Image (cartoon, rainbow, N blue to C red; front, side, top):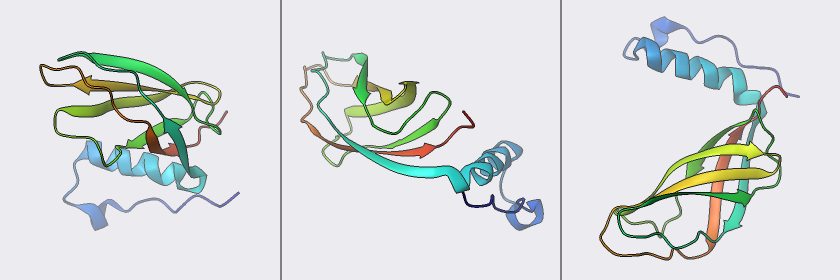
Length: 120
């Protein structure tokens, strides 16, 4: 396992708020345990102006890991991935939102997740 990065010096990041600094510090703590995972996901249709949480298999995640997501290129301004979290071993639940007055069936495509591995 790689060693963690040294502490972040606040003098080098004066423009960052205390909240932002805490976020940077948390990332620093996890940089030696970062993984890029991908999965082909086919979300269910979303009704007009609706939000839906849907679980999908993503091999390699465990409860206690933190997830950052990257939206696929086909997403438009009125359809977005709002949240993602690990809900079980090898399972990520994503929350999708449709912001228009029509139903939308998103295509099956590859989603990318950056996973900060937890201590478990």
